[in-house]
Length: 582
Image (cartoon, rainbow, N blue to C red; front, top):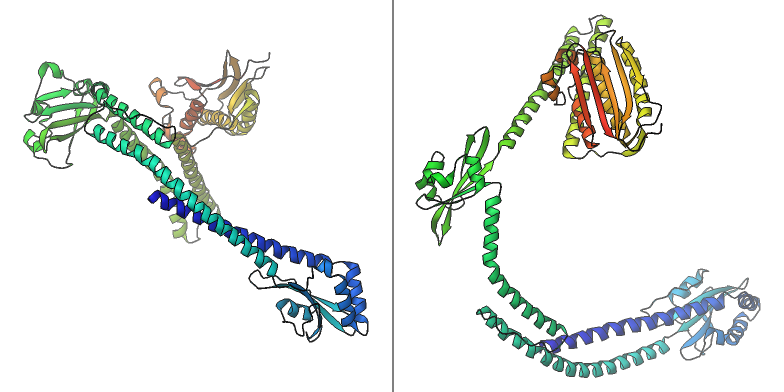
């Protein structure tokens, strides 16, 4: 019955919407057609000229009436639904009419025409449609109004409504018959599905429903049969899934040890043996023998809800985090489960983070102290210091500010690398040209420190596919370190060449060198070979860390060879983009 009501409501709603749009369309078409026809006629030059000449004559109203009568076919005048009116242009008094009326209703369009403008305003809700056009005859002015009472469109609308009602009645009768037939076709299969669902719910998977159609009911029947088959297969696969879970348990990275309510070990995985450093199968220790130092057995068994006991243990330089909680069976504690996490790497990361924070604090404390000291001296002096001394103090403040700015910029760059937010703008470029550019940029700085900077380039192009600006930044960082750690009258050499499928850029100097035990640390953050000299010259200890991150992202490396007191050779090795043209 619900299906019948739904179909009836659907048909009624559809016919209502169709009739509304159809009636609106007919009325809109008729309205547009009227105004387009009027504008076409009254825009004709000859017609308007005749009207104006007639208006200028002594009997203007009669002459205009005669002309309008002659053009009645063009205006659609039928003396029943559409008529024209000639009005006085000053007072709006009716002077002549096609239907012989003695008065005419003053409409908004006529009011507009009284002001000297054409009245073509339309109103779809009004019972009529009209236009009003002013005609200037010199001393006398007239208004021509054409008015249609919409009788034709009303008759057409009534006829459409009658047709729609007839179609609706026929459609309702047909829909009632079809809906009863359709409901019968749907209900019988659904009843069969209901009975089959009850059998499946009781555990009987042997019977299947016969598919008698290819419509949605047939699809639903086939889906139900497939569901029953899959449910049966799922029940058979439970043992296999249990076996898979055991396999995962044995190979998971976290250690898991299970104990009974008496504290006897009932299960464990190899990861637990590896983390605890004992053979559990040989010793078969109880709960107190393994985790008794963290919590006694009776305390764990008394725990309720989501309570968990956490503990830590250090075994063979590895840090373990242990979570202990009871598990329940039928509302009572069934045993104890211990999960072991290896947090060695996390601890190491925490230590590195603490060391990093300490280094940053130390690096910032010195320039901040210097800035504050010099600023306080300037404030306390109250302008009594010599100008040269003030400039010197201000220069120190600016220098320390630049140092802090450089440190913050380097820290931001490293944080972007760590977060993976630094995108490389790769392009194919010639490392030889880049080396020339870096050499020109660093030549004056080396001369300022009384160092001899030389460059050695091959006669062929060494092509690299990478971020040109960042690779040049790496070379500048290495050269800056060489300038910083090379004594006066020393020498620095920049060299570019290709070896096999590798592009090589090396910087060698005669500086103080790096101790062998410190070479693995030169890419650590805040590492310095000579801390006093580096700070004095504005170094942050982050340049080589940034250089290492950039080269790693280009699938390259930085080789270091150094001997204290004799100098250092740093070689940037990158994949070559193409074979050299010799």
